[in-house]
Image (cartoon, rainbow, N blue to C red; front, side, top):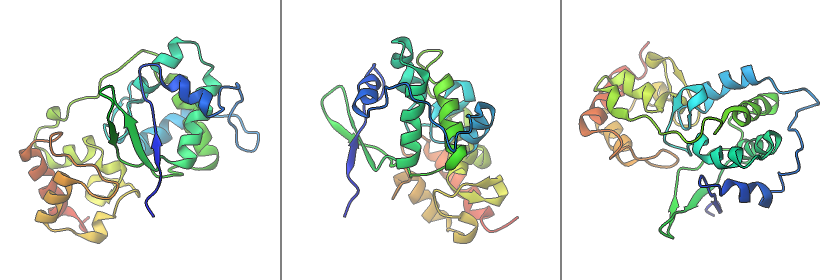
Length: 230
């Protein structure tokens, strides 16, 4: 059975409706065992575990796989929603994941995005990340994801900058992600990596149109020639 679609309204002030619909607008503070959130640790955990998928200007991340978190919450911050309400919404999203995310676009069509796995971080770590995101997301208004063009054709730079390191383990890149396959164990051939990066598959998005053909070839060459080697 396919996971159910979850309709997510990001940006344009629509998250405010999501806050109310989710019953999270009560001002309650997310916590784990009564321990107060540590936003400094939350920033570190966000950068390590979430930054490859999300843009958040305060964290210096520019992932494009998941929603731009500045844009997701900018309208809510401007409208004066309590930080604790945003914190609880983010915490719920971390705990539950997203299933298959269906976004209702301005041209009245649904587009299905990459699912977010549940429990990327857990326990107090999840609370700390949620508190950090709520404290900074949208505070400076809307932001734009960085272009991958600046990465050039350096395979390692593309692997790190395009978000691969947040999802995959690859010792040569210092990557320890666990969302996608362990590339050191898989040791994929060049042609397989090119096809996967180009077309995506499972929870991995397609990078065709995001990375140039030369960039796809470069990152695939890097993975194929370094996987399983230290």
